[in-house]
Amino acid sequence: MKRFTSLALVLLFGIGISVYSQEADTSKVRIGKKKYTIIVDDGKEVRIITDDNNMVEEEIEEIVIHEHATERKHKKRMDGTWEGFEFGLTNFVNSDLGLDLPADAGFMDVDMGRSWGFSLNFAEKSLGFASNYFGVVTGLGLEYNRYILLNDVKITEVDGLMTGVPVDMNLDNNRLSTTYINLPLMAEVQIPVYGENKRVILSGGVIGGLRIGSRQVQKFINNGEKEKIKTKDTFNLRDFRYGFTARVGYGDVALFANYYPQTMFNDGMGPDIYPITVGIHFGD
Image (cartoon, rainbow, N blue to C red; front, side, top):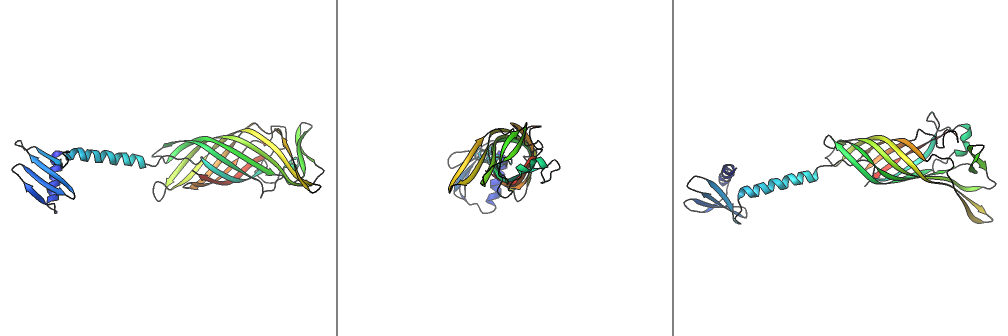
């Protein structure tokens, strides 16, 4: 190392570094604003010292350590496509994934343009492999969905089945809302483009959900006054559910689709309809 440093300085002399004083065994040089003293002892051992009495080898070692630390600091870590905010349109499909609902599910027909949901995914844990281009993602999130029903009905249980009983008023808004705590488990592939920080994202997996709330809100006009009826109930909805999610994106933005292969209501307690959501994800 010492002889390599000495040789490097000698080469630098050849391209314009000025030597401004020299003794029998000591030479002093300036490189830019820094001064170096080269000492050759009787045993031909070479030492190079800066003007603040540091060995050149020590300075080089500090630079190398700093460069390695910087490289580690800027290495792209695995950042999964879960944490952040999501917004999407919600609806139901039949067992063949079509939008035509069974005859006994007519009371659950929704206004597609006004039925939507959002999720606030507040926690994420990502474990990366293969230089963080592939990984596993999990976390926690809070999901809210609202379904605007087209028919003026009250959702209730009749003879052990959930159905819609007509109401004697014209509803301006008939909304069924649900709230879930979600736990995902996804596999994700990230393909770098235009540098490490901009990646194409392909992700898919399952989402488990715990229902923490559900209610029906009906708004109407009565004698010129706006009124509403709020009904909190389980509506025989599933307390626990699981679904599939798929995501494709670039950077911090992705499109997603969620599909739940279990019926909206508990088995045998309502029509066979299956929730879906399609929307956009914004990462943090």
